[in-house]
Length: 292
Image (cartoon, rainbow, N blue to C red; front, side, top):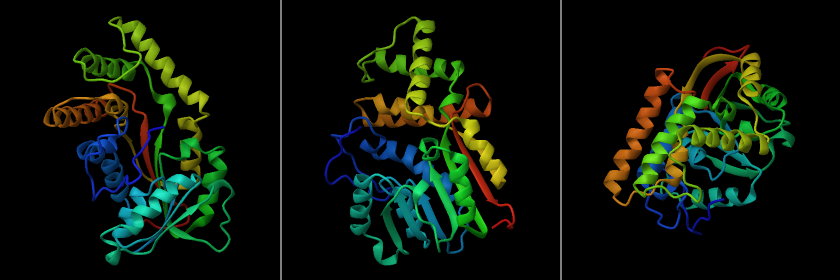
């Protein structure tokens, strides 16, 4: 877990350099924009422009809920981690745009056991959270009954089991170049033996997913398609996040350019089906409703 400054402000409109945050994209404005900013823009592209009641499940420190409230939507963000909700509330209170913002609330709660009696929402958002929640089928069924007649779900999710050898090979080459330049922080540098290193990368990646009990792609995607009418599906770049975590290029201009090129390269490789992507975006409407 990354140790954060007490005044850390995860807000896309108040980005700044945080020198003491080493293994997080929030450490530099351009890295935060290429990661968290891209997640916000991806989700916001499927949020209807009328005023909505929105629930964000697993809101974390609240960067997404905050932006949606600033767009005029009534937003509730819930998360079972009390510490991250404290940060979200602190950032909300210090928001310089709060006078023009719609209602925004945060609650410490486990969605699986959260009391939904009397509650309904036009939009429910999962942003890299569903892969952590046990029994995604029952969780998504609960979402279905929370949504209004014309309700929508936006699910941006990590599928660790989709990481394959081509992805690991690409990751190896990018990271190895950085290591050789002295621009990557790691206690276990990769070797020049590609096969050995790629095998290690794949082993570590999949073992982490299994150890954490993360849901596989099929366990999330199948209930999404069964319970909601699919309006949109895409694979998005995400492997580059792990490169950003260890990347340490002294020149800000060089690091900014390198970061942008890595993200663009991964997107291009996904479009060409040259690597296996690991982040998907699913947008679905309730089966009985109309497209909103």
